[in-house]
Amino acid sequence: MSTFTQAKLQLGKRKRDDETPDERATKTRGDKALPDSGPTTANPLCINAPTFPIDSAFGSDPGGAILKEPDLDLLFFKQFLKAPGRKALFDYMLAELPWYRVSKKTRGMTIRTPRWTCVWGCDDTGAPPAAYKKKSRPIPVALQELKQHVEERTGATYNFILCNYYENGKDSISWHSDDESFLGPLPTIASLTLGSSRDFAMKHKTDKSAKPEKWTLDSGDMVMMRGTTQSKWLHSIPKRANAGGRINITFRKAMNVAGTNNYYRYNVGDGPVHRWRNGEMIEMP
Image 1 (cartoon, rainbow, N blue to C red):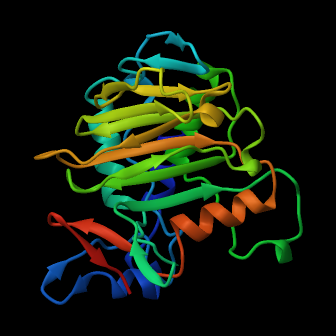
Image 2: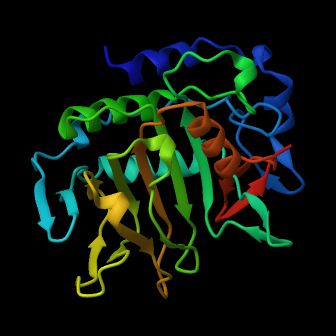
């Protein structure tokens, strides 16, 4: 029996009088119908288990290496996830995960992250709870199973999953590299796209003779950045007119406590949980 089926059967054993206060409180909010259960600001880990298997959604593409001088080292999987499994996973994640719109202050200004985020995992150092500024969150069942498949196909291991939801073409991420010291000197990061297609742009940090690169990532595609890619190249998801919703799932490995604290600070923050309902994000109590 699959993990998904077991979780579904376990959920089915619950009686109506077993509802938690958070679940009862989120049935309605004003005139908007909300789910009977699921994550709230008070209880962000109350996540409904998926009701579908994703095993059959995985494609057979072994991945093709993209090696380019200087210093670019990628592994690209076309249709790592096939239809209709990728659509089911997109719908599940959008509806069931707790989403945050994190704000941060820099240079005296408050900047609101131009996308929705959530993050799961913890470093493997075994540090005491007092070392962490926020309590780490265990990776949900569906994402744990997805991580296992990604690890098998990429040959790497991960302890963090960062999810981004780009609500439309106005949501984006500017030029950056994931080269923080807490990821190690040669980090490997796998990035999976679900939903609307978006451009994935790259440019070398210092070598102006290196030609900038751009690929269109479609739903189900996955790219793995490895080797010196993060230390030498920048990447971005630029704005795109008329683009629909896109979820990006990235698999990472934090090497120390600083990495865990960083991910929760910038992808959860101190704001409320939001959930996607009736075509918009609704703030949860």
